[in-house]
Amino acid sequence: MPSPTLMKYPLSILIVLGLALTVIGHASDSRLGVQSKGEHEYMFVGGDGQKAWYSALELERIAKAYAKSKKLAFEFEGTEKNIWVNTDGGKVLAEVWFSSGVGRPALQIQIGRKGDVLKHKIVEVMGG
Image (spheres, rainbow, N blue to C red):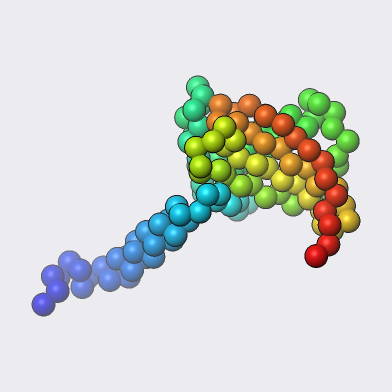
């Protein structure tokens, strides 16, 4: 017979189990998508520099600050961001993409494990 404690918290156990399976499923990928919901960030990634952790919003801020400092010919208004975290241990920690759709320019900024920008490129998004 199950213990009274397990019977008291079955929903909590199912939620924890579901989250664990989700994390395990994502851990097998070489890249993880990182998003923010409103002003609340829900994912942090480890870096190798003076700063141990970066949030999704910090990665976005690093990318935008870089674009502004380099005066890149790219407009952020009306764009959507997509942040990919590399989990392969390579020199690129994250790729931050900004795009406003097919036929429009997209900006990719690669951020290194120490929070520095490694490179950027502006490409036109092609339709499929």
